[in-house]
Length: 382
Image 1 (cartoon, rainbow, N blue to C red):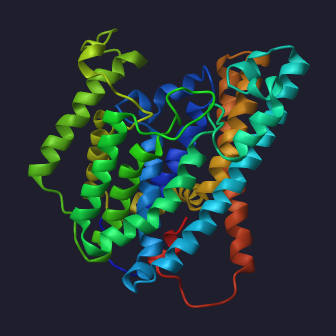
Image 2 (cartoon, rainbow, N blue to C red; image 1 turned 90 degrees about the horizontal axis):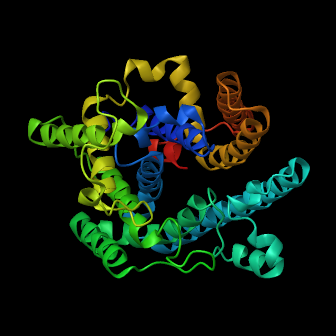
């Protein structure tokens, strides 16, 4: 994404990261009718791709000054601390979610709360399951993004080392690893999925690296103006993805079934970040970067600021959203999935996330030591 000035904050980053967090919360609630309006129903990629791409972009902005000085040891130490922080939040959410879902399963006599989320492993072999959870080889459903993020933070210093030498070199190495992951099935092991991690870090590092590379180009003053030579094919691909996927949400003017045979587009693996999904999120990112100004007036409106505040605290709000999605699942299952309950669950969850993010920002502002204004890289650091 381009930036009109080095002293101005790019409002798009936090906004679309916050929007991705809201979409993830909505998508993670089983049988949630509001999920029909999220990105996954209008193209090949979903909020996960947006989140990882923007995570790479923000990380590149935050760490690039260290790389320019050649302080890769410092970058690795800082990235390691961030990885440790993400790890602690993941384990905390894992424990809290397990307690919540086991309690709900027992209280309501509904085993699906643990069976459908792959938490039943805990009762079968608690010591082994807890041990593998601690080393990230056991990841229940909907709790598998943060483990990938931990690995990506260790990859970040390597990506920055390559980016300093050549953006083309860094992308070539990243694409090579992605190809090996997709062709040879390279992945990290897990004891409850034969194919390995749900989010294969060897594949998803490509999207993270592309985001970091984009931030490096921006720091070097490279602009990204709208060009018909890129906008037309990108728009055509987005339209193609929309036409293929949208019939699943019953758009009135589209046929009820798939327009193309499933085997024509497969594999469209989310686990290994298939080319279909990768191209879709990159086309979407280019469209937004080229057509939405970094300081667009609508991004400064109060409602947009609420979304941006969520994006500024992505780790905490993502973790909270995961826990709230389980509460939402329980509420819809026990009290009915009518429209009123859908409204209460979705609006209530988004409101809790927004208020929590606002309180975190307010507390940060109150405790901050007076100093000069932060640089865009510091402000966007996640």
